[in-house]
Amino acid sequence: MTYIMSLFLLGLVLGLVAVASNPSPYFAALGLVVVAGMGCGVLVSYGGPFLSLVLFLIYLGGILVVFAYSAALAAEPYPETWGSRPVAGYMAIYVAGVVLISILLLTLFVVLELTRGLGRGTLRAV
Image 1 (cartoon, rainbow, N blue to C red):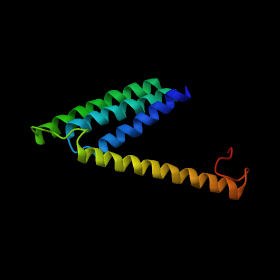
Image 2: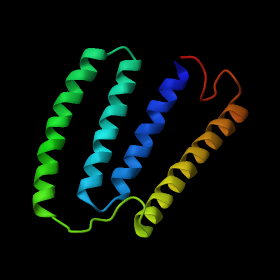
Image 3: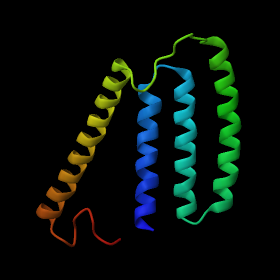
Image 4: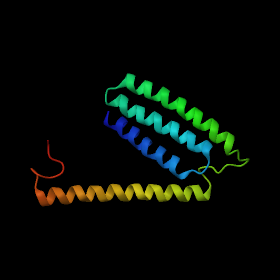
């Protein structure tokens, strides 16, 4: 179960990176669908299957409307894909930023555990 939850969360982060780094509305809408699916998978893992299904259906309806408007307004004959150089550069920058922030948070947790002790650290039982 932990591995499945980790895969859902990893897919959620990678989908957000795909949405943030892609200039083409076609592939950004696909990234939003991936993010919605992974987020609903996280909700199912925490015990909310009906809420997850309702949220997924409502969110996909909204994505359909946004995708129709963006496809009508930004019709490009050759949209940039995830494999093109500028988009790959943006993705590398976003992934590096996410890794840097996670390393800094881990360092913060370790320093607070070491300075405050086990009873008053950041990872104590509430």
